[in-house]
Length: 82
Image (cartoon, rainbow, N blue to C red; front, side):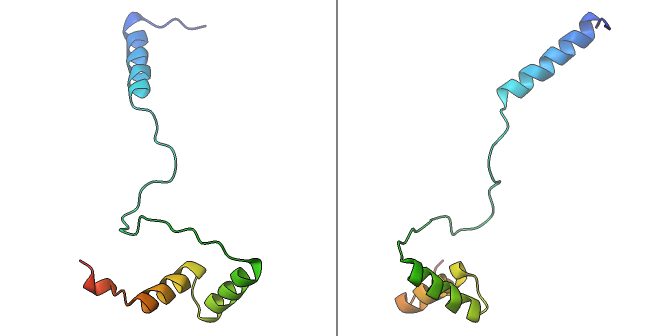
C-alpha cells in the first residue's frame, strides 16, 4: 500500500470536496427550443392507430402531424408569433 504525502492527500480531499459542492446534473440536457410545454390527450386505441397511420401517410411524425393539424384548425401561424 502506497502512502501519500500530506500535499497529495490534501489535493485529493480538495477535489472530492469540489465534486460534493457541484452535484452532477441528471437527465437530458436542455435544448434550445421555445416549445417547452406539453399536452396530454386521451384517445382510444383505434383513434391512436388512425392518427398514426395518417401521420405516416403524410410522411410526418405523429407529433408533427398533430401540431400541423392543430395549427391549421386554430389559425396559429409561427411567423405571426414573436
